[in-house]
Amino acid sequence: MVIEPLRKDLEDYLVLHGLIVQFKKCTVLFEQNIRHPSLHTELLEPRWRGIYSFRLDKKYRALFFITNGKVEVFQITSHYKK
Image (cartoon, rainbow, N blue to C red; front, side, top):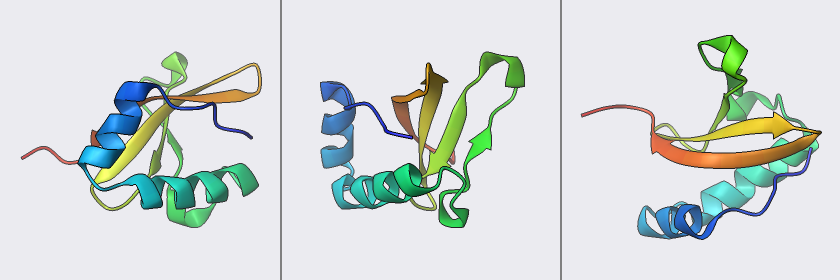
C-alpha cells in the first residue's frame, strides 16, 4: 500500500521532533509489507472507527486510515503520556 503525501503540519511535526529519517524508513517498510514486525501495525479501539497505527520508534506512532486502497496518515503522536 502506498502512503499519501503528508500534510504540511505533519511534516513540520516530524522536523520538530527529529523523525524525518525514521518516518522515511518506516514508510519503505510499510509500503513493502503493512504487517512488517518492526512497525507493530495495529487496529485501534474502538475497531469500528477503522483507525490504525504503526510505530515510528518506541515513543512515536503514526495514526492512519485506509480508504479505497490508499493510506492517509492523519496524526503523528507520542505513544506515551508524561
